[in-house]
Amino acid sequence: MSAKIRMNTEYRNKFYNRIKDVFEKEETQERQAFLQARESFNHLQKSTFDLAKQVVERSYPKEDVNTLRVFKKKYGDPCDVVAKDKCFYFAHNEDVDDEGESKETKSHFDFGLFGNLNGNEYSGQEDTEHFAHAYFREELKEKGCNPDIIAQQSGKDNNPHKTKHVDMCNKALGKGNTNHYSDSEHNSIGLAKDFNAPFYCDVIGTSHCRSRAIACTKDEYNIFLAWRSAKAKVVSTHQTWINSIMKQCDQLKIGLKAYRYLSEGIELASELGIKVDEAELIRTNSTGLTIYNPTNLANMIKGMKNKEQTREQKIYERMKYEKESVN
Image (cartoon, rainbow, N blue to C red; front, side, top):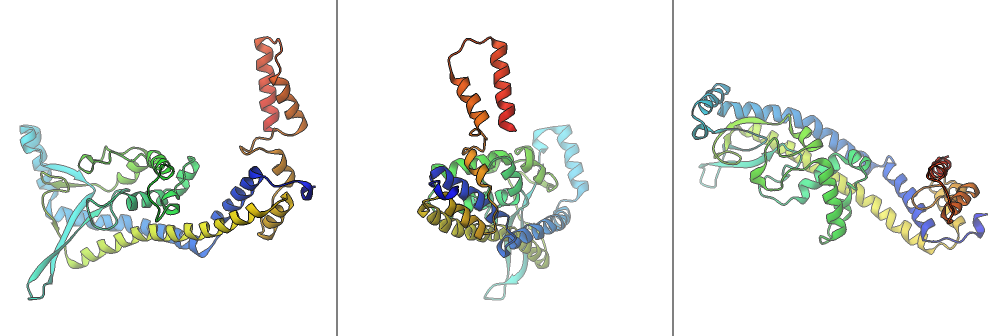
């Protein structure tokens, strides 16, 4: 039967989406590397923050924080110098310069979902968004978003297609105001807020990220660097995995475009170990609704005719059609 059916754009799209879905679910080395990187980051996130909290509380003891809060309650804004933060400048002085003098080594570490990956408080957003989308990839897919869009568009200029899907992902995650200075524990919602919630410390100061670097040892500093590298590895392994899928999909598009008959697409799927139901393929439209079997098609056509019907009859016919469409 399929040997007589000509391939068209709709059939090509069905084959492409079905096969691409299989590519994404295959247990490849690239996929496993990404999942492992994400799992490793999860383990490091909590333990590294526990260390960060210890370092912060050495500089800003709890008793001092509590005292300042008492003063704020008593005297108001002039004593408003305690805030919760999830990003910190950590610094150590154990390195030396060319003249043998000690020098300060410091960097910015942000434990938030959209925190930077390179130590620059004011770095661009794309790498931070890439991490957030990759971290919550499955949740975003369930919400109808494309969490792979940044990886898919890597190396390309910004464009409306990319912007649209990035914005959809950010909204689904509950990303807060992009103004860095307005960031607070109440700024994000949903998944982003839930992710950030456990990673706040009380810090004393009067400016964003407080007014000075927080002292730590070189060993502690290196632990913070290792944690941030693990966060960046989630992005790099995700990019590698998506690149491998895109290379396969590029070849898939070329092949499908050359096919003239439905049977060729079915043969391709079979060779790839993918089972395709020919009957289902033929009788479903691009949205997946089964409308081309005789009963459903007849009911749909009947519903298009101008007939005198009561409101109750119209409701009954519509409910009948929808029920049969599902079945």
